[in-house]
Image 1 (tube, helix red, strand yellow):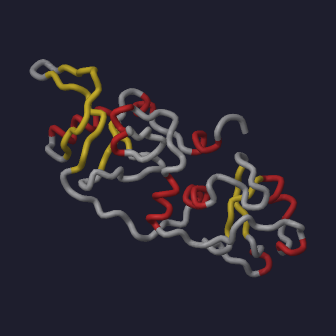
Image 2 (cartoon, one colour; image 1 turned 45 degrees about the horizontal axis):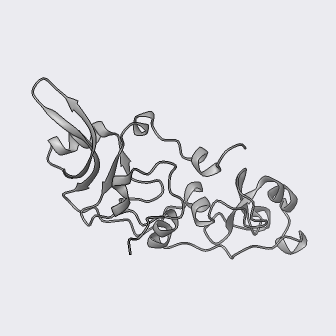
Image 3 (cartoon, helix red, strand yellow; image 1 turned 60 degrees about the horizontal axis):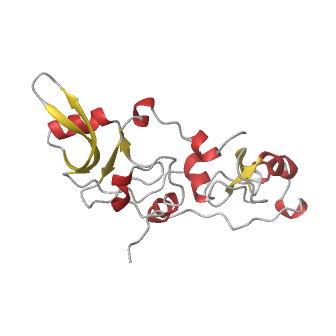
Length: 194
């Protein structure tokens, strides 16, 4: 697979490529880090019009209607706090995020699938504690055999991540585009002033 697997895995609507708004919870933290909580600018303007958000930062561009001129929002904060979920859904995406988009046998990136550590044929279940991200070559090498018979070893034991842990993991994978007005609200690669 060419390119970065993470960016190919999450497809964003085309409208987000043109002046998206970073959406913050009422506590000024992003609703999610990966994928980053973004709205198309039209949704941000609509939410402001409906008095659901406050605009914290804006782009230089404006949009016009016959009666109004408004600068396009780049950061909005919700007026009502949205309580983050405590339970982490067992999804392919969350599994790959937990495993940092790397094969848990060889450490390779890209061309990922998932593997049952204890094969289903041997009674293994599909759960956080038994499923890991695996590249296709390692998955084929392991097959439906027990791990100790393959010569493969796990980089770390599989386990269910806490919601906060998964949110923090998402910070390690910023999207390709980060507008400068978002940096005060994100904690990636922002240069600290002395």
